[in-house]
Amino acid sequence: MTDAAFAARLPDMRALLISSAFVAAFASSAPAVAAPTSLLPTEPEAAQPSSRLVPLAADSAWMPRFAAAADKLAEALRSRDEAQWAPLLGGQWLSAADRARVRNLLGDRNSPFLPALLSEDVTRRVILGWNAPASLSAEERAAIEAGPEAEALVCWSAGSNDTARWPETAVEADNRAGRSYACARIAYSIRGETPSWRAFIEQREPA
Image 1 (cartoon, rainbow, N blue to C red):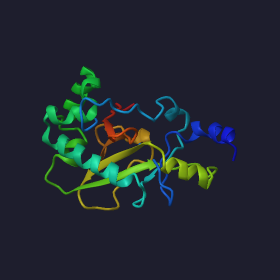
Image 2 (cartoon, rainbow, N blue to C red):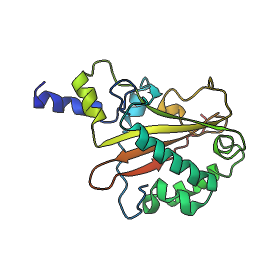
Image 3 (cartoon, rainbow, N blue to C red):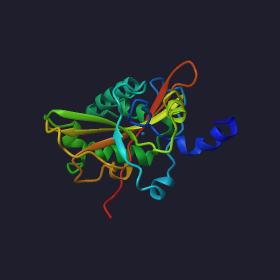
């Protein structure tokens, strides 16, 4: 594949983390470091409703990075201490409206975060990425896996039933009341000397 042809395919590859032998995917620990810009386009989600979520492969180079970030995020959310969770959600870049929304999600009795993270039940977790189109070549899949930025979705659910349903698309990871799981999106960057990540907690009201 020529350099020009490969560059032409990059827009289709930019937010994919695939679950296969070439896995790719959906707050920086130092508040002074700018969080990476979201790799997930906000508009294309509606334009590509068939983008399916799949578990991130255990042998992906990104798995330990996302797993460590998810552990830290879960601990901060369980504390309900804004001084702990706000820096992981953007710190100074987190708007007042988003702070209030997350604060409400951690306190509302109808919020999916209460049973998923804040109850006494056992919490299960899954890390999800986006299933890549079959048209991607092995070269393109390897390039995604080796890239410096990626995104993944982390979802939590209460209980020990491994057959429980997880979101199948990003649209379903909306944290609305009645969901049996709670989710956050993590954008991770390994550009520069210090890796950084930021979490996003989205919420969509029922139609």
